[in-house]
Image 1 (cartoon, rainbow, N blue to C red):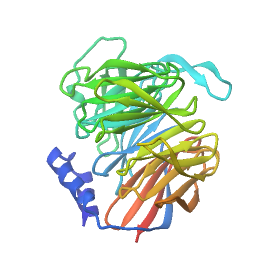
Image 2 (cartoon, rainbow, N blue to C red):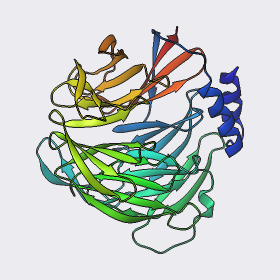
Image 3 (spheres, helix red, strand yellow):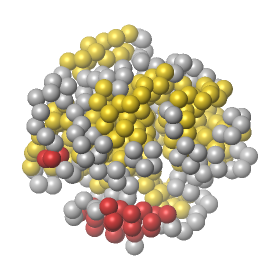
Image 4 (cartoon, helix red, strand yellow):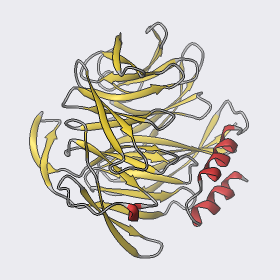
Length: 385
């Protein structure tokens, strides 16, 4: 069984690139399914202000970015246990009060979002108040060169399996003020970073074997606050949700220049795309989701959600959409049909759910949801049919 193979990997050494490719190939050949049946909900403790969650390529590990906890938790998918804790050393900085719309005293080292590159060799983290991102070499952090660079960020890692403790310094790659989403091209050559308060999207060229592992090669100006980013590798374009307006900016990935703006509804937050050139968008203030034709920019269909839809995630077969509803305290689950959304479930997830990522095997699907105000992760398990 695929599950036992992944579990065995989780209890041993980190998987090799060949193993990852083999497991991913198995995932890609999972038997077809057209329905999911909700079975159960589990709750795990993380740390204060869990902002986002991200699975590695083979689904054996989930990483929780704890903004207020200034840490990253590494969970084992099979056992649900925390394996390692990556804790930042705090330094004073300036944060942002989103309700009061004003600057506040805070700390720099607050993880927001994350992205893997180079076969999971590097976990990239955006730091809310540090004006940039950092690369974490998850399983080779002892290879970091010693540096006295004052822009580096100090991390202590606690291994809960061995009770060992290590520390290292990661380089800060300056992108812009209040970095949020990080996305990458499929070949792991470039990252795109949305900088909330700079009104820019940074393009970072990745150098996986050369410190500091990345270099900003362009800052693309946008009309207002950028948030979600979706990369379309097949058509060599990127799409940036302008959360401060009512557009999605289209970028040419060859020139890294803006092509055009797609007119959408107000306050688009997160976007994902499927294999049929459809873009799915969450509209935070409007409380709805939409499917948009990327070729024409026209909205195909919409559906209402609970209050403040935030992160959205597609199932592997691209037939189901999971939506975290922050003020609604729910996870809304939709079946995507040819001409519309069909809501299947609205499952309570207390504590302001904000981030979600999906694990799948042959028989089940798990939505791992992070709840911001109570620092928990809800695991919603569905049986495939």
